[in-house]
Every structure is written in C-alpha cells, then in structure tokens.
Amino acid sequence: MYLSVIIPAYNEEKRIDKTLRGVHSHLSKQKYSYEIIVVDDGSKDGTTKVVTALSIPGLRLIHYEKNWGKGYAVKKGMLEAKGDYRLFMDADNSTAIEHIDSFLPYFLKGADIVIGSRRVAGAHISLKQSAIREFLGSIFRLSTKIIIPLQIKDSQNGFKAFSAKAAELLFSKETIFGLAFDIEILALARKYGMKIEEVPIEWKNDDQSRLSGGKMLKAVGEVCKIRYQLWAGTYGNFPAIHK
Image (tube, rainbow, N blue to C red; front, top):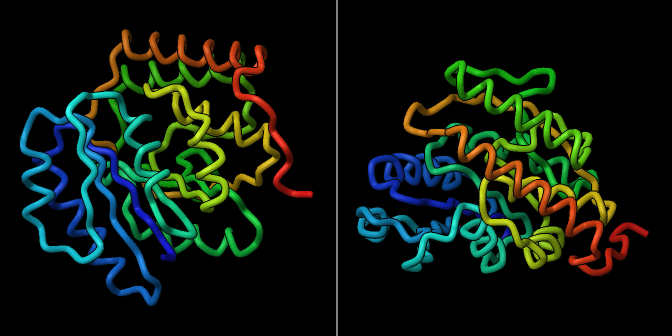
C-alpha cells in the first residue's frame, strides 16, 4: 500500500459524503495504491450510516462508541493504516486532497513529516476565520511558542502526512487527544530528530467548525502537560532515526 488517508469524524453526516467522494475522485486517477480510513469518533448522528452506504474502493470505517477526541481518532487510524505514507485530513475538506501531490516528493528527498501550512510563503486563505476565532488562535500560537518552541509556523492545520516509520513511532507515544495533539506529535518528532517540511496550501474556513475560549484554555493546559511529560521523561527514550 502506498498511501493511506485518515479522516477523523465526529458528527459529520452532513459533510463526510462530499469529502469522501472528492478524495476518491482524485486518488482514483493516480497510479499508486491507496486506502481511505474514516475513524468515527463516537458520533451521535448518522456518520457511520453515510460512510457504510458509499461504494468506494479502498474505503474502510473504524467506529467506536465513546467520543475520545480528534487526537485519539487520528492515532487509531494512523496505527491501523497500511500505507508507506499516511495523511490525515479534516472531514470538512478545508484543505483539499489535491495538495497531497505536492507533499509526496518531499518524502523522496528525505522528509519524515510534511505538513500543510497557512503561514508560509505561497499559502492562500480563500475564506478567513471569524475575528474572534483568529484572536483565540493567535493566543494559542503564542502560548505554544513560549511553552514548547517548535520552530513551525502552522502547527494546527489539519493536513499532515507522515512516513510509515514516523507515524508508528510518534502515534504509539501519543497521550493527548484534544486540540493540542498536533503539538505533542510535532514535539516528539523534534525529539527524534525527524525532518519536517512545511508546504504552502490553500485553505478554506468552514463556518460549522467552532473554537471557544474554553476549548482554547483546555488546549493550553494540554500543552503544559506535554511540556511536563517531556521534562519528566514520560515518553521514554528518543533514539535518532537519522544516523
């Protein structure tokens, strides 16, 4: 298997059909093998029913009853995937699957992780977030920069690809399942000495996605927990993957 696409979903019955059809439409034109994994994170709506009704080759569903959080869903999908390269993307399709075409060449040049960025040269935001959401996001970025400097301009965009080796190393150690799970994964990647590339993307905000002040404060708390766990040695050893 060449590429695995993991899509975490929670109450996405209204958006998941269009997203999956778009992903399949693009990947079916490629010469490599692929799979699409939807991880239903304990949805209370008809997400599972919508996914199982689709006749898309290579599509499979992982479903569990309890809502654990996006980070858990991504972890579940990444560790069950079979692809040499493993991408997770959001169910709202805010970053289109076509961007994977510009990601894959970086792996051939030695990258372990390639992440979509809204904050590097060449990126384009076709529909911006609300002022309050952008304000909350800026507070979170500043807090993260102070607590865990990652030297990454956009850690939170939900379009990230990993080599199989990187995915299995990182997600097996993941402990944060809320909004800050990306921070934990990238912090662990830095500890392993992994090569991370940020690639410009076109991004479109979805008005159905929400970020409240309470969620932002909880995410900052998660970042503090990551910082403590790094200091306490909770994650164990980090042998360099590039020698």
